[in-house]
Length: 134
Image (cartoon, rainbow, N blue to C red):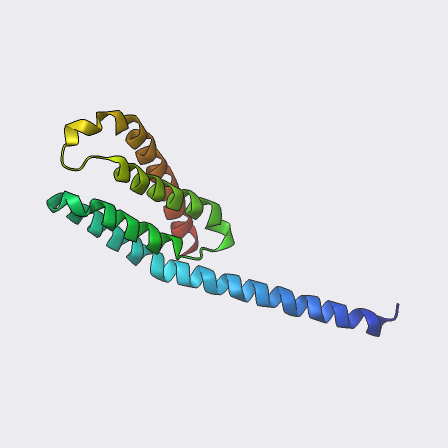
């Protein structure tokens, strides 16, 4: 193969790789710019549920939808998926709860404790990524 024949595939490869890395850089930039505010807003919304517990299912459903809309960088995609799954699990668990009688939900406590642990660990992993890369 001549050097000219090799040059075209190498140039195309470089172009494709440059496009991928710039797309990934854009995803990281968007993630770093948007996710801290998103998580803060979701936390505020969830905290506000204390004054209106009946709104909790809707608030959590909306939070999960907003989290699922994020396109994280590859380097934190697994951790982000874990965080979203934990939030989705919490939302699903809340759908099973009797919000009119909190004492009727004692059987959900073990699942809630497990989900809280998952939320903390996945949240810490996403936070560590942010501190290192944003």
